[in-house]
Length: 466
Image (cartoon, rainbow, N blue to C red; front, side):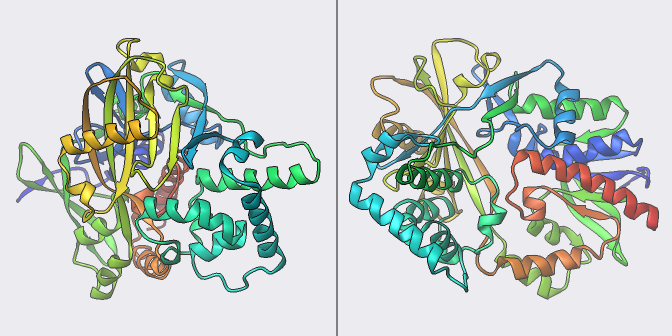
């Protein structure tokens, strides 16, 4: 193994996704020596964009909401005028119909009978009058919040479809941790609407504005912009580079072993500090010396869901007006459909084709993960036709992206294991853990960026104390 004569003052950022790049940007602004490392060939992580037949396509739907302020300032600084304001239009497919968000009364009447509406209300009132004092899982939490009947007809199948397990196997605090759950917001509005309907009050949505910010040329434009700024300040972004080992002594990380995936042997790089956004289970495996056996055994309680993205190019335009559709129907496996033709005209090479992205969540051992790319594309097209999104339009081409460990699963026993692992990692005086996978937190893009910026400042404070 070669020893790279790198400057020991370098702070290494493991992962060039949103959290890692936000950390690197913040450190660069503080005139720190920064090296960003990622095994991918381009920056952006789960929020990057890819080019296919002239289309600029994101890894699913990624946009920036209008808060928090530090993230907005970063977004504006990097993109300037290269962004668009979008009033997002979202619908939910439930009981063979596409419902508005928030739902309209006539839509509710089209999917619920009067008998069911009465059951929803009575079940909801019963949950409020006789609350469950010992909630132990997601099933009980949502039943207590919305009533058992509504849980059964709306949440139960969707939870099992998305997470691959029943609500009884998911931690109760998932309600608080999964901060961007569309369906909880949807049901809150549903309950308010029913309540107001029967009390003769006018309906006012509590949901904040649907206006979001989006880069003109896709989500990846933002992250490429951050990487460009970092490099312009004579800092480094090493792509196609794997972290092989994270070496430490007395809970101080002093050296990283890196390997270029195409060109070189393993090289040792001295370092001053580390911010890691790689999945927390992978970080533990790379530590040298290895963590105690007990800590390694706890990793089995930290489970991730994988994502499959099936992109289809449809001949024709104006397929549907929504930006994204959430599919709450167990007869099909697709979870969300994104229509990129409705996001920004700058990501489209023409106006007569439409790029759609069908999103699937699964485990490694599920049958859909084992399918070939062509079989997945066939299934995606069939499901789009089954739910009525495609009629006579033809699919001219497509491709598949498989993403491992994209969504942390909050099983009932994850929190105890995670806290013990975090307590162990906190002993490292020059290490910060960030990102969705790194912190095992289901945060949206805004919060992940803020986490990266805050962790950079926390690391600098820790280094000053050494």
